[in-house]
Image (cartoon, rainbow, N blue to C red; front, side, top):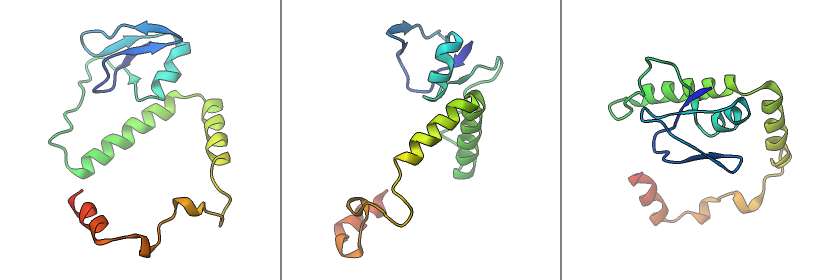
Length: 121
């Protein structure tokens, strides 16, 4: 199957084997590697479809693009793979009402420097 390589990706390997990236930014992979690569941002190649130029897009257009890419990725993953990933994710989450105190922030923890950094982002 032909997949589109994510922007910024310069090397691909799977199962201890290097996969050559074609000039147009695609890789040819077997079904075994397909789902693994899709879970890392590769998308099925559709001939004639150019990679979108993200630089001039508005926030709404970027959100739409991200949602579309996410849906394509999810659609390419098998039901069992999705179920397995959700089970793992759910198991790693704290029970309702029992947040890990080390990850929480209280107002007293925030200083003026923190607010200044947030304003610059």
